[in-house]
Image (cartoon, rainbow, N blue to C red; front, side, top):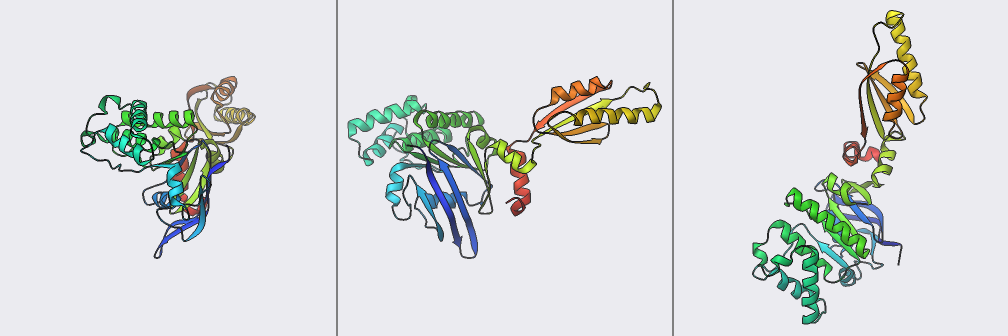
Length: 328
């Protein structure tokens, strides 16, 4: 089955005079890993609560797995796994016992529940700690157990709300790799809500920039860069030295600089050049560092430095964030 598994249309939620989510429309395809990226207080968690039927929108509609969370919250929860920032377990029970308990609540027999729990604990890397009481688990171990807990009912969608807070960098890397593997292997759709730029960029197919209750833009990093920076998502800086013995003195040097700029502008993909402090700053459609170096040297100048920059998610996010509604 293909198509959109999450469809939000004009979703709005207010608390008194405060608008937490403002006219949100968003679709997420089956099997996609989508990152909902925004600062704390942007409205991400409120959106998730509406998707799970835990709070109702003031206006607009939501569809998760084809179901309306407001009308059928139980149906949505049966097909959706939710991993919040803080995962709750019975601390005096082992990781295995906690999972078996969840499995039994979801209709599995004791035998089926134990077999599935054992398999999932191995999958998330907790088989050695399965008999350890969860009260003794580290933050990272609890999040792994939480992931196994949401997988116990074979969900079509997993919603992760700031799942990596408090986990050490190595644990974050392993956790995110596990999310990608599970999504790809089982076709699970993942909604990853976070304010961590690089974590979202690391795992997500598409990203939605969420600020002040509004979804300002969606797309992959390349398309978002194109929206913001037009046809120039690459920036190249070249340091150039023109030999002092060039005929004509300063006039000759000026002519040589114009010759270099003309040669660079003639390169397909170079959109603009600005010269400052003996360096040329080029806005490019793609990575042209090799062609730029060859053109400068071909004009008889010396290349003293060359660096490139591709706009990433942090540039994109802060540009939208700083611009606010100007970038809608």
